Image (cartoon, rainbow over all chains, first blue to last red; front, side):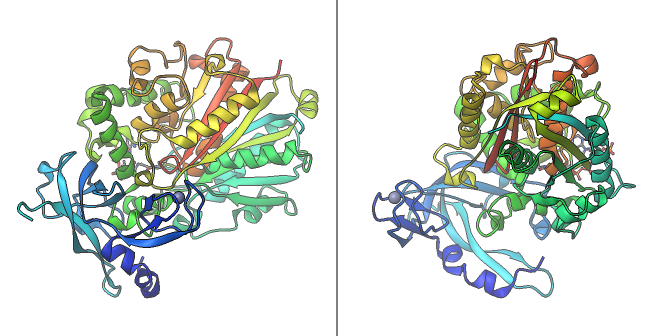
Amino acid sequence: MCMSVPRYWRERAYRYRLVGTECLSCGRRYYPPRRVCPVCHSRNLVEVKLPERGVVVTYTIIRSPPRGYEKYAPYAIAVVELLDGTKVLAQLTDIDLSEVEIGMEVEAVFRKIREDGEEGIIEYGVKFRPRLTGH
Amino acid sequence: MREVAIVGIGYTKIGELWERSLRDLFVEASLRALEDAGIDDVDALYVGNMMSGTLQEQEHLGALLAGYIGHPGIAAAKIEAACASGGVSLHQAYMAVASGLYDVVLAGGVEKMTDRLTPDVTFSLAMADDMEYTIYSGVTFVGLNALVYRLYMHKYGVKQEDIANFAVLMHENAVNTPHARFRRRVKLEDVLRSPLIADPIHLLECAPISDGAAVLVLTTLERAKKLTDTPIVIRASAVATDYLSIYERDDMLSLRATVLASRKAYKQAKLEPKDINVLEVHDAFTILGILALEDLGFAERGRGAVLVKEGEIAPDGRVPTNTMGGLKARGHPVGATGIYQAIDAILQLRGDAGKNQVPNAENALLQSTGGVGGTVAIHILSRAD
Ligand SMILES: CC(C)(COP(=O)(O)OP(=O)(O)OC[C@H]1O[C@@H](n2cnc3c(N)ncnc32)[C@H](O)[C@@H]1OP(=O)(O)O)[C@@H](O)C(=O)NCCC(=O)NCCS
Ligand SMILES: [Zn+2]
């Protein structure tokens, strides 16, 4: 189950910093990043840093987790629509599970995703927490 | 293109079959199918399977199983399209006969899931979605469907009990199905009181982890007429895909691949939803059953649950659906499921469906879904007369 170091390392910018791609022909943005725009078929796409704030479009609470995530369960997963309209999927953190709701404002934070066993690497990525007021 | 017919069916019981191996299950289903067809000259074999590599540490199923069914030498390959592996295997077999390249082809499927513990199976099933980005978050396959379920209730104001009702009907239908995984009734209260797996999805709204194998024998309609009085014609065979992960789609409440593949299929068969007497939908979770009724054109968007409530999808209703219990209660040995759907429909078309027989069943539509609609295979089968 251990993920190889190169496999983890090569995706780090996209996973750590919410970097997606934008189509320069039609303006559509994608996460995960793509080389070809499926809407207008342009290959003229560039990397773009996506906004870190958004709202919860839908959510679930994972109670029967996959191998490797057992010790974090139960945890919330949401589809978040970012301020530019791009949708991403991520865990919610720093929140009481009974308080999660559709429409809540959230912001991205850098967090540990899982420890890959005793020998594997510690994997990190973006989670979302309720938006702190006043910033 | 040549007209293609199904002349033989073979299948095992679905269950936690600890005494049976993957190859053992597949061989049993194949030999039964060939006996049913009354032939043994096979040109090619397609094996629908999703997880033999991760759950059984076995790949190369085409050659392995071709040999064990007694036909080393034939063309053979494993077909993988997540939970739609069975439906896509049938599509490959259909093309092989229709094109004129092969005359007799086996379209099979097999999955051996119960040798592993649930967290391992859960991890393997999640491979139907994007491992690098989506599954990395810790979401499960049940969880992805739960995201759709919650949004559906929110958008349309539909109550959970109306969606969960789908599972009650599936268990009812499976009571009379000898090969079903669960042959017991459940009440709506039982479903809603069963443990939550990924909110709002309860245990009794999920298809069970199961073992099973199923095989069809395909040949030309011309030859089929000499072999049997009840050949079943494949009137349409279509496959479509969509963005793999739901959040990449503009509309998360419609499986576009179902819409695309079914519209192609209706056109190929020159039929409309009103001509379909038997429907097999991929109800891996209750919400997927409801969405299928809408995307296939049997209900308006947001109104699928109404058909269930009004008894329209029961065996004596207007659109009899999953008359043998569907994925929920007949069972869901993933790569074999698309083939079991065909078999359950063929039993209806042949008039061999027992207590759940739909009178005068002529046309059946099958929907085999991979992931949350990343791949959908649609087939329309009809009685040849
Ligand atoms: C829902 C799920 C996690 C339950 O697995 P589990 O927690 O390991 O359940 P267990 O095996 O411990 O079973 C507990 C009991 O519930 C029953 N059971 C398990 N799954 C069931 C189901 N889906 N429906 C009805 N009963 C079920 C078992 O028979 C057992 O009954 P018993 O105590 O009388 O023997 C599992 O069935 C699952 O992952 N299903 C979804 C499979 C899937 O995603 N398929 C691909 C979709 S395309
Ligand atoms: Zn574009």
